[in-house]
Image 1 (cartoon, helix red, strand yellow):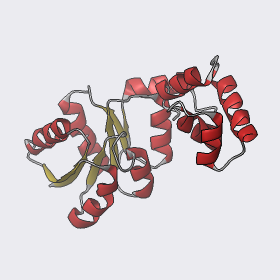
Image 2 (cartoon, rainbow, N blue to C red; image 1 turned 90 degrees about the horizontal axis):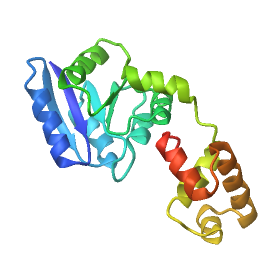
Image 3 (tube, rainbow, N blue to C red; image 1 turned 90 degrees about the vertical axis):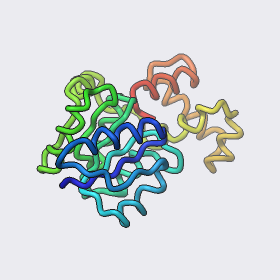
Image 4 (cartoon, one colour; image 1 turned 180 degrees about the horizontal axis):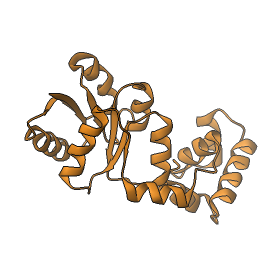
Length: 197
């Protein structure tokens, strides 16, 4: 029996995944959580063989959780099939990356293949990642751009990030140039659409 933990903040999706996986003779869903910051405790308590993580969850993102669970069999199951997310997930050591619009048979096959020691990646997303390439943003540029996504002023960003206003402007300018955007709002949209934030 393959013991699976499902982590997704949308209750209907989480319950649906759990119900569909439970129909399989060789898969048992041992836990379900709705927040990223609940996953580690659930893993410690239930000892799943495979952990299915959504990316965008309250408390902690699935990518951060994956980094913290390095060495475990983690499969990202997300709506956000963005090349940048795939790159970050692979860097975090995940064993699989499946988009939510894939057929159920692909998800159950991914669980079995990951359990067998394989790495499973959605083929369309893998091809897209090869054509888009890795993020050109440095970690600090991405951090500043992410913080700017809420529309904060440069002064507010500087206070929040403990940087000078000039340093914030430099990071924003660099991020705008690297994304090919005209302004920071467009840079945020470009970076988010490619999964760089």
